[in-house]
Length: 225
Image (cartoon, rainbow, N blue to C red; front, side, top):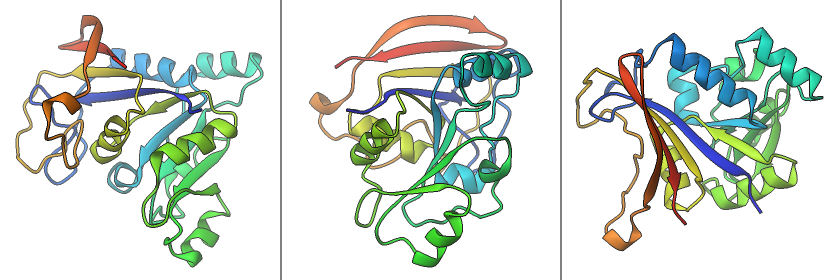
């Protein structure tokens, strides 16, 4: 068993998540931010990779007081559980994701991660060991399911999303495509990683909707099984 997984990203018109220096740029605007906030509020947990934590230092909290109150009335915590996939336990102890907003945090690490780092991070988050040298995503998601997480949102980055897609762990994809071109062969994309070689291995998507929003378009895909 694993949680139902929804990937949400904002990409430039040429499919980039950020610049080649991994510098975050504004791709979408207020209307899309509100959509993402609502999507977060409907999930049990939000997950990112360590690269996103180091580059962007996100908090992954819900911004809308109305959405927070709605969750509380349903008997849920103010914010979804925040999760970092961090094979080598490199999450900075002062990272916003560990401190901003109330609620539970989980860090997935490997057996080879620094014991000292794991001990320090255990002061701020539950540490799940899932894999020998790298986090085994399938096993980690099974652990999250056992912890009661049924609906999981993944916000990046490209390496984590690639890992999730390549292992068949994604059910839906929301992709806001903005009206800018970032460029650069080294700029991160939606699905970084080794890439598929054989066409028969390519995941196939079914479009649910394509909606003009702000100065871009929101595409909602379902991953065909």
